[in-house]
Length: 494
Image 1 (spheres, rainbow, N blue to C red):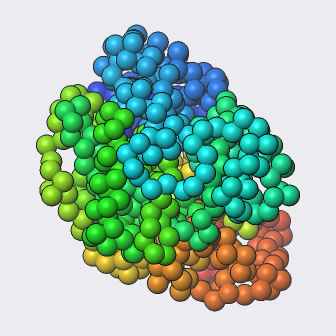
Image 2: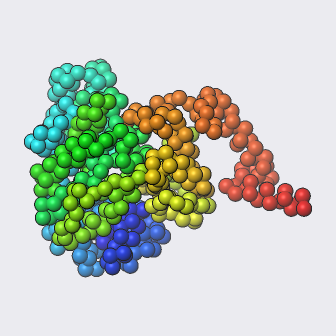
Image 3: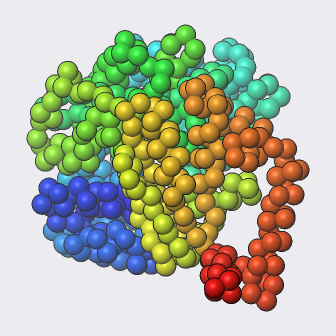
């Protein structure tokens, strides 16, 4: 059973099919016609569209698993994937949870407990509190002790929720209230902790995979520094600045942490790395990551199939020296959102879809023409991955693929990727976690050249006026009106 939706559900279904495993999908009312429902061997309704009434209902999911006789449940990422109670309930129901044991998840999935675990194995970490703050007064004491700027973070969950940067002491009270409130809404816990804000670090993570027999490997690193509001936008493997020595140091530290907690299955240990190649433990994601395809591309390993085999009790069957990195892979997270309108979500009907292909291109996608992108869930449409022998080749292939990609009927962030990939700093790998915010603040671009915001706004207004004139009757142009108009003009010329 796949207790998830969208492209990750489809990804797991495909891995199962190659292994000869039958699959069961679950869906909400909004996903009745979703691709993961159509591709699975069986599919069952969970409930209404809101996640709290469907994909977060562990009781309904396990009841369906019992009814259909499912041997295992794969949680994907998001939803219940890092819910230790769900992992424990699955095991109690006789259903194998494809992920870490509940106890290991509780230790490493909690940001504060994970920091304590990092201390126990001697892993360097960002200075700050190792337990949740009991109030704003304690936050002030910790912040005064380590010095500003600092960062408040939710102890549970991730994805940038419940995080606030605090540059000065007078900002702390409001930031604490906002971070705690958002954490409560997002994760059901308002617990937050505080750490030193390392300015302009790189965000680099290590993929680990562990089996039930004491085996644990690190599968290289991913560079995740291109972020917007703490949300990853582009990921790469390997990092352009991580050499063999640093990779080994970070990888061995990640393995020590996983083994110390009795970790099993896929996990990701995240670090901040400064300009002097000092690395600091950030957190551990106790699940498969969204960006796992770039690791698959450079290692040649199928991480989902590895997850499933580990869950069956099989040993990894690999030694650390067997893990070799080859080439370079870049992933763009394609979202239904409008970069020109503060990245506002853009749900709606997909009227046209032209997907890229060719050498070195992979797309994990779960949408099709006629599909309605729902408002209730994360607006990610697909993950576009480009692979090349070098980073430069991967960038150029991604630009070529983006030029082929057409999604009609909704707004997307495809233009943002072209802007990033043509930027001189990105191409030279001069990036850090603040890179994208600085790029966005610099203004708009036309064919790779920055232009002032007022000029960009004027160009957008002129284009909109042209569209209105080009549409039949002078009204709003449909997404395909220019094609139709071109066809009529060609007929007149003939």
